[in-house]
Amino acid sequence: MSKYVKQVLLIWGGVSLAACIALGIFTIYHFGMMRSDKNDTASPHDVRYVLDGCHFGGKQIEQVVHSHISSRGFKGDYLDAFAFKISQVDDTDFTPRPDTPNSHWFRGDQLPPVLDAAVQLVTECHDMISWFPTGEELRCSDVYVYPMDFYCCCGSVDPTMARLVFVRRTDNVVFYFDFKP
Image (cartoon, rainbow, N blue to C red; front, side, top):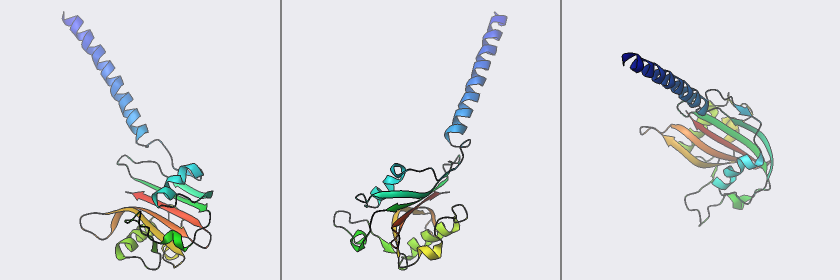
């Protein structure tokens, strides 16, 4: 009986070890540890949600100029950014609408302090996405900022994560920044 039990336990241990190895490989792959960043691969379909999220759904995406989709870290950290050209924008696109009372565009040179701190977060990530405008370029009167989401931790004014949309009116280019450390 003990030889039989010993063989069953050895087989059970081998199967368990193989299952743990397979689960570990799946977990590493699923959380992006084996994936690499994707640069300049996004299509207009991939960035459409940005326009829908800032209530520009009626605009036509003419061309995706740049994109950066980072691999996801084990804790879910990432940096995604897009630059794409859209059809014409005018002043009415940036005025508050009664059907979307909580949405508001801010001129880049007139940002409230918390949103300015979120733009500073973009500036700190500039070395990872060198094609993205600098903080100075984002804080000018020709750029409008739409805060989709940002989070300040522990009562701080400095955001730790942010999802922002920028529209540069001179050339109708939309910049999207999504960062979670």
